[in-house]
Each structure stands twice: as C-alpha cells, then as structure tokens.
Length: 562
Image (cartoon, rainbow, N blue to C red; front, side, top):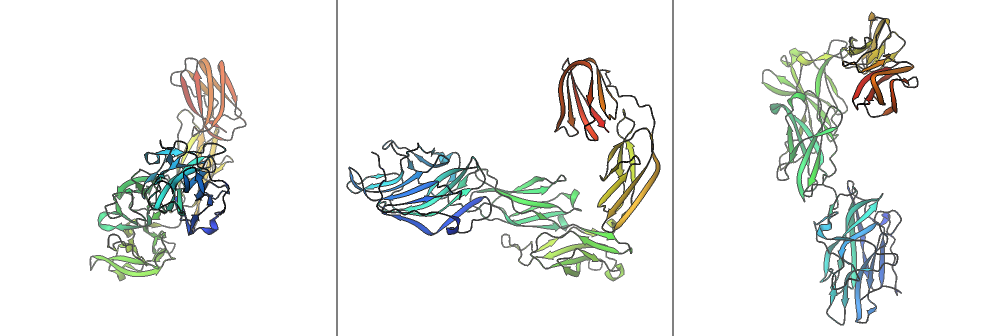
C-alpha cells in the first residue's frame, strides 16, 4: 500500500520566516511559537524552515481525497526535504513501505538515542511522504500513532547546522479522524549533540546570582534563582581561579535552597567571582548564569596621610546606595556610619575619635528587589569583607627591585623581582645595555660587562623611579655548559648568530621549541656528532633544545638567543 499526495486541489504554502514568530528566548534553546497556530485542512501542505537558513526542512501534509482502492481516506503526513533533517520513527511490520513518526509526550529526552527509538532519514530523490496518521472511511483502520484526537503531541527531530546534529521537537494536534493538523511551536538545542526535552522552551540557566560576605563564617554566600526545576539533577557552583579560569567548588541539590557557602578563608581579603550552572537528569550541563563578584573592601593611605575606605564596584546595579558600616566599640557591633551613591567606590574615613576608635569597616548594599529564596529575604543585604586599619597600605608608588642569577651554568642570566610598594599599574625597566622591558618580573641576559639598572613604576596616583649604579657585573670568559654525564655540549650561550651542538655520539635528531614547548621552531634529522644551527633569524628570547642521540636518548637544554 503506497499513499501519495499529488495533484492537490488546494495548495496552501506558508513561508515561515522570523517575522511571524515570537522573539526567540535567549540561551541554549532556540524556540519559536506560531502565532496564530498553523492549521492544515483539506488538501493543504506547509513547508517549514526550522533554522531560518532559507532551505525548507520539513513538509507537513493534510489530505482528504480518494487515496487508495480502499476508499476515501484522510491522511496526515510529513516529508523530509533533504538529508540533513531526520525524525524519530519506524517502518512498522504492517506497512514496511512507509515510515511512521512516533508521537512523543511531554518531557521526553530527544537526543542521539531518540528515546530508545530510531532516527528516520530521507530515502532518496523521489522520497515518499512519511505518514503520521491515516484514517479510512470504509473500514475502521488507523495507521500510525497520531490517533484518537491527539492534543500536544511531539515529533522528535534533528537537523544539521554546520555539519553537526542539533536535537529538537515540533508540537502538533491531530483531530479524531485526521481531518485537521495543527502545528503549534517548535524548539531545538543550539548546542550541537546535546539533547532537549519535549516541551522545553528555555535552558535551565540559573539567573540572578548574588554574593554576600558572611562575617561569622568568614566566607561568601552565593545565592541565586533557578529558572526551571524540571529534570534538574543539581546546580553546580564555580569560582574564578588565579589564571582567570573557573573551578567547580560544589553542587546544590534541587531539593535544597539555592545558595552555597564558600568557606575559602585563604581568599577572604580578595574579591571573588562566581557563576552557577545547572545539570539535568541526562547529565547535560546548561548555560551558566552571569558571573557575579563579591565586594572586597580595603583601607589605603593617600598623599595627605588620610585613611580612605575603598572597594571594587558591585556588578549588579539593582541598588542605589553603598552603606558604610563601622565597628562601634561601645555597642560591640557594626553600626551604619554613612551612605554613598552606587557610582562611587571610595569613602574618606573621619577621625577615629568621632567613631569611638573604630578600627573595622564594611561595605553593604540593600537590593531594590531582595532575592527571595524559600521565602527568606536573607540576601537583601550584600556585604564585603571587614577592612581593618591594621591592613591599610599606601596609594602612591615607591619603586624597588632585587635580582639573582637563575642559571648556574650561564653566569649572565638574571631574574629581576619587583619589590615596589603600592598597587603598580605599569613598569619600565632599563638594563643599561640598550634593552628595556615592561614586565613586572623580567628575566634578562647580559654580555660581559658592568651595568646600571633602573626601574620606573606608575599608577593612577603618580610615579617613582629607582636607579642602581653598577648593579650587574658579568665576568668575561664564559665557558659553554656541559651536561653532567658529559654527553652533550651546547655553545655559545647566549647564541647570537649560530648555535653549536656537540655530542660524544652520533646526533640523530634536533628540535628547537618555543619556551612553552607549544611551537616547533626547527626540526631536522642528522647523522653527525657536531651540528651548527643558524639562529640569527630568531627573535631574542628563551628556547628549548631537544637532542636525540643514536641510542635514542633525549637530552633537553634551555638556550638563549640574543
């Protein structure tokens, strides 16, 4: 039995463009709602471009003509328009000539496993319509699963975008006798190879994270709002590390209140940045919330020897004032002293006599709309760490540095260490040999001679310089370094035009890498005991030399090119 829909008496072609959709929901889920719903009756079809790339992906068909020798029939079908779109279905034993789409219910995971079913692809150039339902007048016979008046049935789909599968769903109604098909909305996961639940219209992204310092626990409390709890396995809390990346520091059960304590007492004197993600029951980790900083307060001394309480700006602008709290020794608790506009981040502390010798201060804010967690508004006040006068430091820069030899076998390489006071924004080193650096702690090699080294430092409050006369004294007559086992000699160090590698056996292979080992500068196979490399084109700096001998032993050396 082959059912075809040709020579349609009435053809309704709906070209679906973004103008007829609601605005898509931000996040990982791409969602469109048909307003009004697309209704197919009689001999009509509707072609759909799901990912708005100008190519129709699916065609839905409604037919009520004389279709087979069995008599009049109503049919609802779907056709795959190309090979980069598939649906969840199967060719049943009663009609192996057709594929039938499965009718999925709400909250079914559509992913590469297709809910335990099969993915149906396009058969060929002259592909037949795949049937959703067929109802015959003359005999009580239905084909497919979309029967008995389907309301909110879901068709599982996947389509290729940039040659990667994206999983999604289309929600439809089919009436009792397949006389009418209603297409309501659809969605797909914008992240390739990640599943989506039928009826899911947005990601499980946690929203509105707030961070409050808790004095009694010496740590930060991270509170947030969940956007959706369905299928949630746990929330995952991340904190920024020293390299600018994020480390997971804990999980929160969906049955627990959405907050987490960070007890890292080693970092309480620094502003910390956090975000929260959600992991669902299929182990898919959804898009994280926006990152949120805690507040770090400190006391500094300005050029007039005045104490300034300053803090980093809070990243959420859902408030209008910062509140200044100080520890009142008479009341033995933090008391409000003053308030400043949310555009400011510093406060001139008054004399200690007017504060009963107050030594501790804190910044707090009250949110315009407090974050409500389980009926508790305990995050209505966001607070900083406690800044004390014992930890105050100066604002204006004071330059200073030290240096030491870092390569025992090469007597002209020095590591410089900045010892300047105050927060420095920029550095300028002059090594006295015509070269400079803007690194904070540079490493530098010197030719034989005596050198005067200077350092200039600057921040937003001013600048300062220090000059150390005859600071570096490099003796002449440097010998090439020799390996401890006597197998390899590399010279000269530093190398300017050429580098000689001498071994006590045949050299099989030489490789030269960048100092981080990620970039290969030179590679070659050899069969001699002495080799010379031309390094004149290389930029000044440090490199790693790997030499493999004929006995397959590998020897590594750090070299310097000037």
